[in-house]
Amino acid sequence: MKLRWIDSDGVNVRDLAELPVLRQRSDGFLWLDIPEWSDDAEVILSNEFHFHPLAIAESKTRSHVPRVHVYPDHVFIVVHAPEIGAAGHVHYLELDQFIGEHFLVTVHGPISPKVSLEAALRETEAIAARLENGRLRPTSPFGLSYSVVSAITRREAEMVAEIAREVGLMEQRVMADVDEDPQKFLSELFAARHELLTVMTMAEQGGEIYRRAIKLATFAPVEGLERMKDVLDQYATVAHISEAQMRFQQGVTEFYRARTDTKMTIAAERLAVIAAITLPITSLSSVIGMNVIVNDSTRWISLTILCLIMLAISLVLLRWTKRLGWW
Image (cartoon, rainbow, N blue to C red; front, side, top):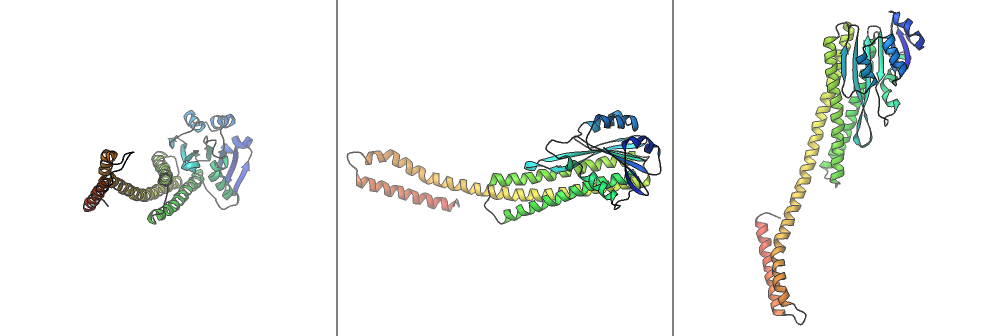
């Protein structure tokens, strides 16, 4: 856990023992960042901040959807950030926020063992670095929360841009009719669609959470409400861009599948032509051939006549299938 005090002079890292004293001050605000859940963290949230047990329980366990709880003096918001893993799987990185008039507490929710802690702390560590070098000077916990969540939406937008680049390259391969393994290529297309769908879902859900927080957080200052409205707009923008890109990806997929299905249909028609031509000949040769070609002797005249008949049948069937447009 890392405790920071932020005022007009800048940011200072403080010892956790100073937390009770800092809680009494009003000339700035504190930021407590909890990277991983622990018994000490639960004690601090319960005894020092007196947060609601339900909010503490949700910080302790994984939340699969964003959440918002509004209390008289603070708001509890759960958001998610995407992290693309192996085989197109998208991990949900949870960030829980307790936002009050003079404090911001961020709790990083339980993460998958396949995701590094550095990935989960990416946004908060980046904001902390900007605070320490003076490039970021928030005036309230709402302003600091705005910076953190804006970093999350920027990562989502960058992820959509990277997926769009990959889809664009796949679209070029489709239009160039590059010889592809259909199963592998479709897996790539659907993996990209899944990534876009996940980002869009996170953005839409995050936007709905902030929409409700704006309605209910009557204690928040005007500046805080304006910050939350801007976060709502950022989420809406990411969701709309993701949706538009997903429609484009779906169009590429449908075009590729239509071309592949057409090739399969043509192949099936040609197989039908082959079957139509060879079936009568096979029947004729199997029934009569055993009486013409035997072990003791071969009836060459009859064999020649049969071969001519089979050739005539083949030519007639080929002409008939050509008139029908089968080939």
